[in-house]
Length: 124
Image (cartoon, rainbow, N blue to C red; front, top):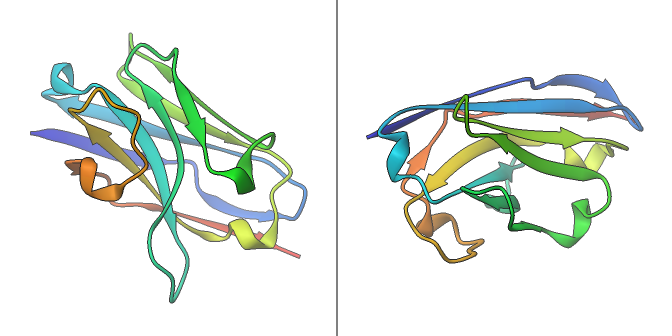
């Protein structure tokens, strides 16, 4: 079992920045890929960004490219999402997820472990 705990969410004005963190514990050695997803009220959970365990391979959804940066610190089993130039449409609950698959995937069903989520609210 892998346990994931997110932190760093909050309320920010449009154009501002936030940095989300995700700490992994338990059987973290089984993790091959991690990712961030988000879910806005009344909408389905959507992919935001993913990173390989090595940190070399990253992928982003088009709407956040150039504004968000995913990274990880394997010495601390922690993943980050630096969010700059935030927009009101970025408002959502952000979830951290971990997968045992090596392939680059954006499908929530390919991630076996999930955090409890952290709220990000961007005011206009």
